[in-house]
Length: 446
Image (cartoon, rainbow, N blue to C red):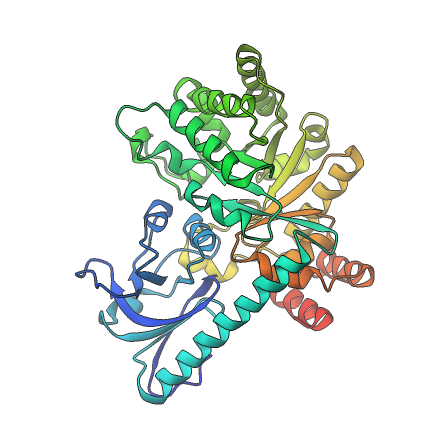
């Protein structure tokens, strides 16, 4: 929306969807007592997870990228966000009334009079639309267009919301925050065990897929005292890090998981950033040793398909794993050689590039041939158009934020076999977010 009069519009990239009107607060200024839109140079995922949701209505950053982990946390918390808006956004004076458009990637600054009333009307329209979508999603349930919807979770405290949503369960529990902020002398193992048991009680019989520690790239954890790397996205992160430090990172987490499973929690364990089958075998052998020692039940073990090497050898992985999950954000980053946090490349990060689509289809086809279930997660899965494309490429399960589930269910409910074939053809031959958004929106009236 750019039809305001006498308003400065800062154009960035839509990170997390939504429309909100509030005065802005620039990070570093005295914090206001009422709801505000936070403006900052950038935010880390931990910064974002720690935002006071009673006060922060949304945020806009000068830097960052639309598929960064910061944005993924914002998605999970349901906070509208705009990123890569450029340094001029930092010059907007705190207290200025603004409208944040997370869909269009815009911050409208200096609203007053008729412009402010128009922005408030748009905010109310968005809220009403979202309420109706949530009601319809609950009526449809977690399966739409043959695709099962589960949710991502970054804070265990959100677990109660899962039972009230249309999600089938927790398709990705990010456990990074569980390694931080432990009370007193409580150990990593005990902190995790308590969290997993609490989650299991909150969601009942629903399945919980737990991603083991995924630190590195744009997710620093100073407490681990990791060495500085020139290119941390290509460095010691994910499963590489866990296998390099099994005693303090991998083993305590696996012990907590198998203890929770022994207590009745319905768990799956998923290893991130896996490059080779050998890495998975090493991790699964450690897991089996712990399971046997504790006398715990067997738990499905899977990997996230994020590294091109993993995708290109997916037939070998399919012989070993119990399930697969495509991480669309990192997979796109590595395939396109485009950093997900570089604001200068924000407009070049195209998760629907034909190369990404062909890789997703290759993984889905290999998984189907081997009888291994495959899901997809990330920003692409949480987009109505992206969800439809992924379903058309053969993905039968999507893991998205709770805030995104209603819109995704609405889009998938309109998908029929004819549309699937046409969309798959377009995705594998031309691709591109702009092209596919136009095509899918027209075909399904989104």
